[in-house]
Image (cartoon, rainbow, N blue to C red):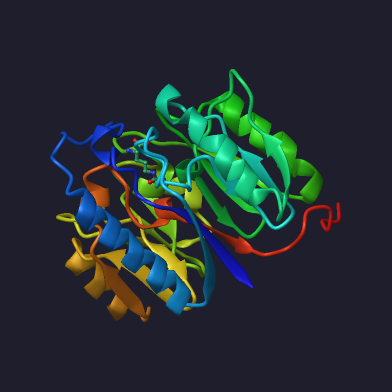
Amino acid sequence: MLVAITRSVSPNLGRCELEYFARHPIDIALACEQHRRYERCLESLGARVISLPAEPDLPDSVFVEDPAVVLDEIAVITRMGVESRRDEAPTLAEALAPFRALHSIDAPGTLEGGDVIRIGRTLFVGLSHRTNAAGSDQLAAHLAPFGYNVKPVPVSGCLHLKSAACSLGDDRILINRAWVDPAAFESFRLIDVPADEPWAANVLPFGGTVLCSAAFPATRVLLDGAGYRTMALDVSELAKAEGALTCSSLIFRAKSPGAEKI
Ligand code: CIR
């Protein structure tokens, strides 16, 4: 059974962190509706959605991808690059504890899940404003006993590595080469986002479908043409907070902690 942990939109999402976007008013009721549709979509594709209650004092807490990295064997609770988001971790750790043994990233390390792309036993870790080399090294140390290989990848011009590139669930990667050196992904086939949709690389392959943002129709056409089954979701309000498709869920296979084999 695949589990997707999500968290309802904070009524204070309008006070979110922003790195690259100008602040625009966010329609909270619409953001909640879009988020519920996202959850229903994951359910329809086969996930058991565990929806955590909203955290009014934590504006960015809907973006549950960032405070944790969940592997088949363990989960690593991250130390986020911005102070305002660090209190998101404890309740997420509580939600993950029934499923995985928990490890953590500690100071001076910083790491956000949006900077981590896992493909098989390789984790590409974006070195961004939010994730530093110490965070990446700590992640590598936690995961080495399980046979994972961590490859740090410099990212510039966008929030996270997953703003610049995402796995399409096979041997292909959707990428904006302006923000990440494609040499990092030399053993993969690359699909470039259309020039007029630079923020479109953040897509979520799940349940045989690639979830795309409705704001990027040319990217969807491109992926349809490449043979993917796609589905467009309107995430306009979460996008104003610099969120996209991967950031609002933590998806993993259900399993009790302690069941892992080294
Ligand atoms: C932030 O700046 O942390 C949030 N406003 C957006 C986080 C989006 N996270 C993600 O794409 N993984």
